[in-house]
Image (tube, rainbow, N blue to C red; front, side, top):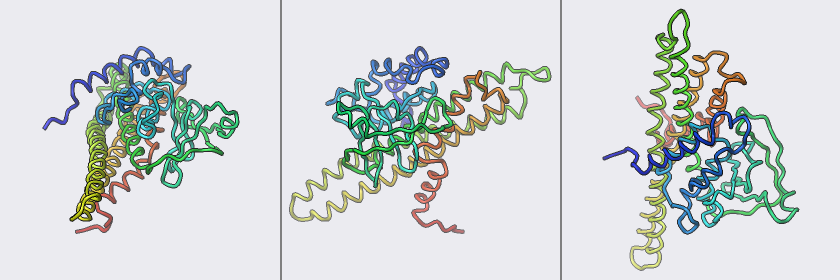
Length: 363
């Protein structure tokens, strides 16, 4: 069995990488809020997961992982995951998504502030286990005034956070969990990209920075730290791929289970048994997806934070100064590692899943 990415998936990632290198250089992070967004929209990036009926490509999450990784490698500002991954799932009939004309921000459960909320046309907020849609752009002045944003201090200068208050909202059907799984995996893919870029920059610096008459990259203490970070990234990346496949297959199982349950409910005989079997299949698929998503986010977050720590130690105090671009990637690693659940949260959920709810230590 081949677990590698296909030529088409890698070609998509290469195209996104070229666009970001041309239109989202490090200098753009200092002066623009959404560099390269127009170019990515023209490429069709924001419609990759949108259904064909809404002018999208209808791809699966696993298909776009390499492209999402490139957005992390470039430290692309703006609500990328929320607009390109969450919105197509929750708002599949909105034709503006595929064209990139609609920008969406999310306030996840457990988080006090919504990143990039000032850029968003729509805000998606989780309340009581479900999604609520808050429109920031409306023809009615009262609707615009019903949404209030208060800027708060955040760790990432390219990802400002806002406290959100609103008076009017629209309830969206369905639970919050499926969309949150997709957002978590997409964020994990971005973390892998951030970690890879941090490693590449740090290795290059270690080759040219000299001390005691030798490149610091020749010192064992530096080599070991870089190797540990590289191993962490290479171990985390397959977990992210596995999580994306589990989420895609979980969605397929849910669709098949719902279809089977519908057929069984409409027929005579063993309808109850068929419905129970279909429900059990869906529950197992969802449980596997939750476990894999938590494993991916925890591993990717730890790898990115480790890469950031090693990069800062190798560069020294200059690493987080205003003059060095490295600070953008350091901040992105720290901010994304806490988004859609911290590493501690996902480690705890993973432990509970592996122990099937029984947390006793067996001999």
